[in-house]
Image (cartoon, rainbow, N blue to C red; front, side, top):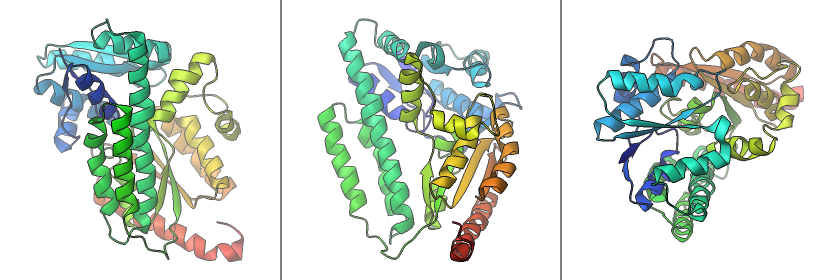
Length: 368
C-alpha cells in the first residue's frame, strides 16, 4: 500500500511521520503549484470552489507518483465539502487511476472515529495505546509546533532587519518537523527552529499595524491558495494574526463536539445580531470574529474566501454593516484560479496605507 493525501496547509507533516514511522508506503504530493491548480481546474466542474480544485490537483499528482490509496475527508452537506470526496473519486477513476479511497467523516466520527481510521490505515492490529500516542504526537505535538512557529514568524516578519529571514526558517520547518518521530526529537527540533528565529536581528523602532486574517478555513491556512498573503503583508510591515488553525479545528470538531460543546459561544453571541443561525462553513466565525477582534485592538480585518463559496458570500454581504457599526476596516479578498497576485498586492498596499492613516489620526478621533 502507498498512501497519498492533499497538503492542506501543514496537515501533511504529521501524516508523513505517521506512515514513515510504521513502515507504510507514503507519497507526499509535490508542493502545491500552478501545475497542481491547472490539473485540478481541468478536471473540475467550473462552479466548484478553489479548495476543491487544489485538493483534486494534489491527489492527481500523488497518484501519478505511484500511490494506490487516497485519504480524503467528508463533511457537512450544507457546504459543498460534503460532496468533495465522492465527486473527486469519480473524477479520478474516470481519468484511469486505480486506487482505494478511504474517507474520514470528521463531523460524524470525531476523535474515536479518527482513532479507528488511523488503526485501519496502519494495518488494523496496532495497540490502541500506540494509536493514542500517534494522534497526540501528530496533532498536539507536530501540528501545534508548526502553528506556533507560524505565529512567531508572523510577529518577526514586520520587525526583522533582514527581510526574508523569518520566511526562510519557516520554509525549512515542514521537513524537519516531519522527521521528528518521537517527543524527544520534536523537542530538539523545536529548540533549533525557535533559536534560529530568535537570532534574527529586529528593528527596535518598528510599530507594525495589526491585521486579523479570517474567512474560509482552507484558503486562510493554505499559502498557495491565499497567494502568500501573510508573507506579503509581513514584507510591508504588518503583523498578521490568523484566526484559523488546524489544531483549533481538531479541538473543536474532534474533542469538544464529541462531548456536546462545540464552537465558542462568544463568537456566536457576537454574530447573533447579524446572523441568527449557522449557515455552515465559516460564515458565523467570519462575522463574529470580526466584531471580537475589533474590540481587541486590531487595525484591520482581511476576510478571505474562495469564489462561489456560499457561506462566505453570506458573511461578505453582512460585512458592510459590521464595518459601519464597529468602525473597523475590512478588506474582502476573493480568490479563484483567475486571481492575479499583482492585483492582490496593489489592494493590500492600499489597505496598509488606510490602516496607517487611521493610526495617525487616532489621537484626534479617539479610535484605533
